[in-house]
Length: 216
Length: 199
Image (cartoon, rainbow over all chains, first blue to last red; front, side, top):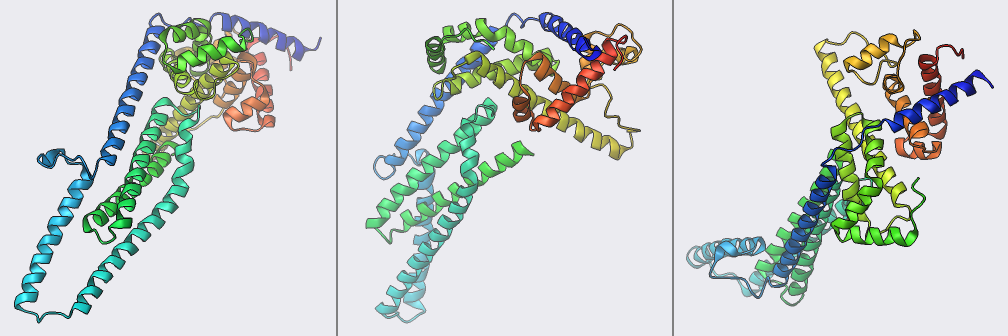
């Protein structure tokens, strides 16, 4: 028998002894695991509730909003309300200016003005959509990692949370687009749509930043 | 590893774990907890981190068991545990690289030796003194003394039973590199632990 072979057998014996002498898990480990699983289950349940609530809010956006309690309005409604107030203020100023200082514009010119504003809004939306499509190309594979068994629980949970936010925003965007098909020039809906696009862009950037953070 | 599980038994356990059934987790822990802890402990050399890694492995089981139940639960958990442990080793390496860079900037480092012991505790230093001189160096201290990558390949192959191909996947190295690291580890260990045998 060669020295090397004898040496390997010798090492194998030592390794077996070492394995046998490895300390047993600490007494409370099983309890801690069960507590961790319980916490994860509760977290999942509460996230599911939040998501369901969010979807529900999205569906009811135009129907059941507690108008008498502004504090309870969802963010898109605040954005729309803010935009509406700003538009009213600007509209009033323009009206006063037009009434007192500028001769009345022909009706044809006013129509062109509305058409221009609408075209600008649509161009801004298209620009957002293009930027989002590019960001989605990068963020897609990152979000898919949430299912990777090699990813730590905390990271997977973070990615799942970001994915859920994106799904909620997608649904909101789809609903507003549906509304705009029949109300093309609705200023509040246009503003809300732009706000939703902006938020989606931010979430996608967050996904990419999160990936850079864990791979750096 | 853990070849005694039957498919239906495993599938049932996984289904229950995915549903958060605590009795199922206790059953899995009773079967594999000790082995998984031992694996993490041998790789990480830290009881606290080993404990955290085993917890993470069980959380992964909770999240993943329902989607794609593994056929060999023990083997699957073993691999997850090794993966998580290697993740932590990589983080440690990155952290120590950052610290080393900071030390270099501060002018605190004199030299860096790749063959220095992976562990830096006084026990390992004492072992390092004895090594190479035929003193009674035990296997655990000798393994600690191996360079980090060589130590990992040796532990994964000779202790945890992984194949070179699997080690390559786990560590992001080639099969050939895994083989050469193992050869190097065995030679160093033989040299330190069995001084009578010439290479």
